[in-house]
Image (cartoon, rainbow over all chains, first blue to last red; front, side, top):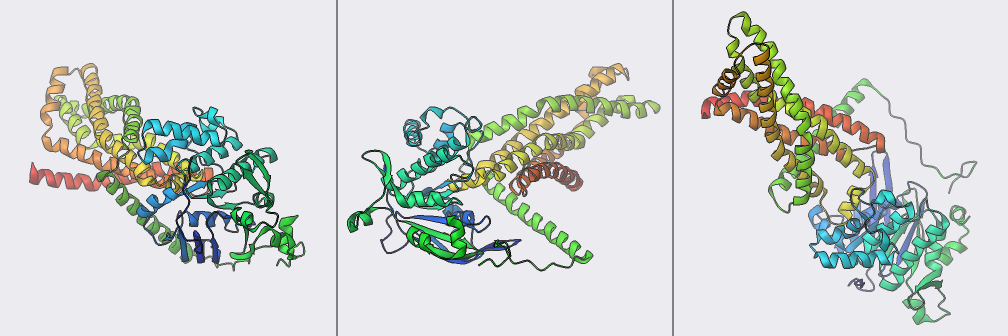
Length: 278
Length: 280
């Protein structure tokens, strides 16, 4: 599977939020949020329930429009694009929803093949790519099952397979380990590490589990050994630059409360941030 | 930073709004206007998706099977008994004047012009509009609709258009079947209750019908098909409140669709009679 890297220049973020504001009848959830995600970077969104993590992912995917501000993805102003243009654009984005959001009237194979069928891919190629995607998440044997026959963790993994089958350069993860046991959560994180380190996707991951973010920051997937290993650059600037960066963004009361790397987050003396580290 | 005694970070409390009768009425009116606007937008998008490609042919066929073939048992049964009841009621009145032979004429006209399309619309609303609302509502609350959009699929073309096209194609056929079964039921009752000849009943029923009567009935069927499909889809795609909201949407789809069908029947009948005079 060959995932194409984005063609955006190194200095320009792949995803850029500028003073984004969005709210509903209850009030504004995001109140002027600005941040960027560089190519091959993983941005971990943290915050309390209702802080706007899922909203941020949906804004980045163009599923919602901000009431103010702008969102740019791969150089395109998606916050002002028409829905017809957005439908085409979203083929560049994979989205893993919180509960998987699999189509329950279709088999696992048809779920993963959905986008390929929409793109008019031939039946032979569909079968090959679906099995390849399911092999990536180690669920090849479930191709003929329906979602109701899968466990929660398996549904998340199928959702990951569905998101990556058409090789998008950007992947959004909405609480991919929520409600899962620690072992299954580790399996999901391993999949995400593989996607990041082997195929170089840019991603945003919303989570309430700080350990998921730290796992992405401290570990990498080694394609030679096919194992997750501790990521140590040993002061090697070239190696450090090659490693995909993981940054953290904490949302609080509609604003960006913290933005930075794992070390800055761990070293912070802020009382609110410390509560995430407990 | 949180400064409450327990250190919990909360949200700023919203100022309580004064509740007045005027405010309730104005909020209610605004909601109705907003709903009408949203429905009109969805109906317009559905119309555009019906007349422009791409089409999801497999989905259309699946929906035709569900809406058309799936509704056959209820249409066959109800049609038969509707015709039977009509003959019983009208026949008893015509017998008083010694004109029981007119029963076939009246039942045929009433069925084809009015009762066939309206009752068929209401029966299919109860069976299919509710199913559409609950299916789409369930998809919405489980983020399947968002997943569809995230994968570049227009939910209007994938979900609304196939159901609308299927209903537009199958409801007129169901109306024709209901009309026929109604006349069958009426014929059976005429023979055994009113002692009329079956051949006489059918001859009078067919002779009473003009092309304009058929056009009235089937044009109403097309209008009712559009109404029940789009109302079901609208209610399903605007669900709020999780699974409880899905249940509410299902009920509202049935009620709203039924009311709109009956209300529009009045205007369509007037229009049909006017056009029948002018055109036929």
